[in-house]
Image (cartoon, rainbow, N blue to C red; front, side, top):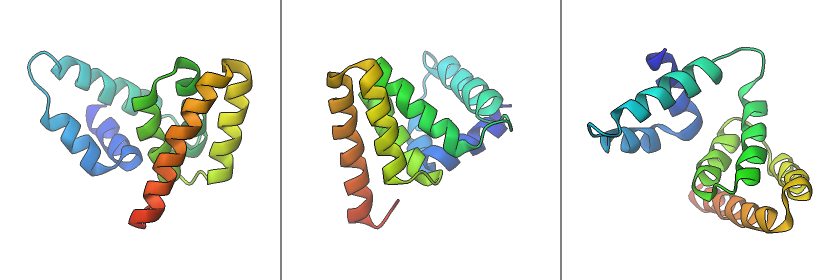
Length: 125
């Protein structure tokens, strides 16, 4: 399951990002990375019932609700890689803002806009 998760994780988050994260693994963080890669990315993201695009949009809403800006940033980039449009991301963040609070929505919009504009500047999406 680790290998399946590693492939999905690299596909969604980008190979460079994942390779950098794994290069920083030490004896203390190894179990965390193994669980995240095998369970989160292999077992859950590897299921066929929801397309990756849908999973990305769900993650954006949940990360907004949890106010997790670092994770939100990488998952906005992942959502774009998974085929989500800027408008879909915008709508999910608006929906989450109503249920999670304006401060969470403001922060999520700021982060998403930074990622989206960064992609435009580098020619990536």
